[in-house]
Image (cartoon, rainbow, N blue to C red; front, side, top):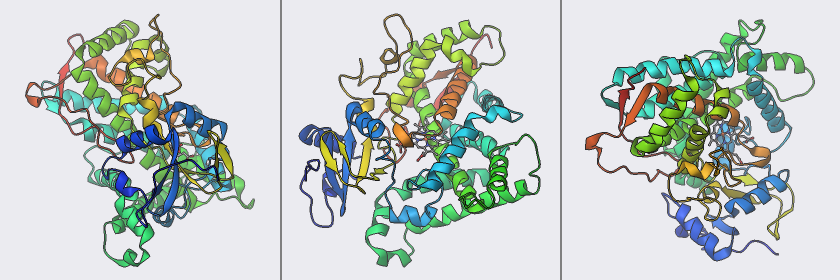
Length: 465
Ligand code: HEM
């Protein structure tokens, strides 16, 4: 009763035929126009409520934060993660304690010998060395940004990094990409609705194999740390967690080696594609909007002067670069449908009654390009984030990290990475769209995480560097 309206479903398929299999975003827009910002659809046999536009998203995710904390008990994902970790763990004491632990460890990383900022700047020396090698030519930045983002996470959680050419490292990254592709998609759906197929050698088997290999990697790292755990202050997140297990021994908490493995896998998966795809999107637009790149160069040069390194504090003196970065995140639209939520109690959204256990899909993408919320919703324009005085402002519809009790827990790290990486790169290099590359294609490839299509990036050393 009083449930959000939606299109009538077909038996078994629900409304799947009304959603384009490779990119349902336009179809969701059409359904929102017809049924309003909060509507319902059947994904197969499963009923879900879709939230569209910043007002409905904030009303639900922020005002009903507690009621929207749950995650769907998606069968494939729960079989894979055993309900542990943070991203896909349902609301409960284990999720809460691990989220709190991860947030406070990421926040306090200054307490170790090396701050988060130092770790990012160290990775940047390797990024710049590789870019220098390509100066005068071009490269596909996909691998570089993936490896850099992944290494920053490795440095924070394991205290060490991999060489970019390390075959083992490259395999780990490929496994993450594969899990992201397969765990949310038609194969996962088939696994859920047709248990008889689970024994067959179909692609969903790969998700389990990859997840197991990632788990074995984490076990190895944890064992190495256990042999040298009496280091003060802690070197990384694994040290912090092992100390936490010791502190909590006997109090019945869920902190143990197997939860640690799941937490590390989550951070590794969540922190790689997202940051890397945002950087690729920023570079694509900067190469093809040369006047915007030029203004960034001017602002960076004037703020940094002869200083060797940028610091995260410098963002307050660089409103234009900040605006460009946020605009890149807006158009990159990296996690378009967020991670699905579930209601943990009966609640009301937008005047509709939503029972406990309903799946909720936050369409973050709809807010990032919502008419009436942005001065230029359909173009790449940093003035979406600048007021008349040229000061940086952040509109309410900027929700790439979602909002509420499940808001991305890597937001601060991601923002720091994006700023330090982009400023350092633009300070030393000019990014150039290759003359023979034809017209740029800005249409992203849809997925649990969206990415720009592969492209080549021309690199020139800037004269004064
Ligand atoms: C540009 C980069 C990033 C974007 C756009 C992004 C976006 C998101 C979004 C939309 C969610 C889902 C929130 C929800 O369920 O409502 C999320 C969750 C999460 N993100 Fe990020 N993320 C980014 C980078 C990172 C990084 C670097 C890390 C690792 C430190 C990270 C760790 C997580 C975790 C652990 C969750 C699950 C939180 C929970 O369920 O309680 N993210 N992120």
